[in-house]
Amino acid sequence: MEIIVGTVILNEDKILMVREAKKQCYNKWAFPAGHLEKNETIFEGAKRETLEETGCRVELKKAFPIYVHNAEDKAVIMMHFLANIIEDNLEYNTDEILETRWISINELKNMNKEEFRSYPVVKNILKSLETQELYELDLYKDLQNI
Image (cartoon, rainbow, N blue to C red):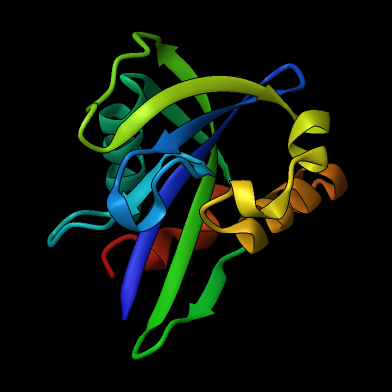
């Protein structure tokens, strides 16, 4: 099992997205996210990945529904959190990220699904934002140290 944690940083009607530089997902758009490290809480991991991929320090506000994807030989659990920027540097690791960009929700909805690293995740996040299907962080308090 693999655990991915990340953030959705919303500012008015725009979301901060990253364009991937890694070979397996080169040039694809995604939310700032990555693998949970050993002995790291899901909240710490989401903040760390956001800082590494965008240069922004964030405060987590709400949780999105958990998304489970069955890959070839393992389950991938994806956990995203709605976040506010508390320190904005917009600097990132160029080995992993080609660029960061604020993209409007409407533009994201109209992009081609091949432009995303994981279109089903983007689609589910946008739907949750639209329907306000978001959860209090303490709902996941028992999952913090998975």
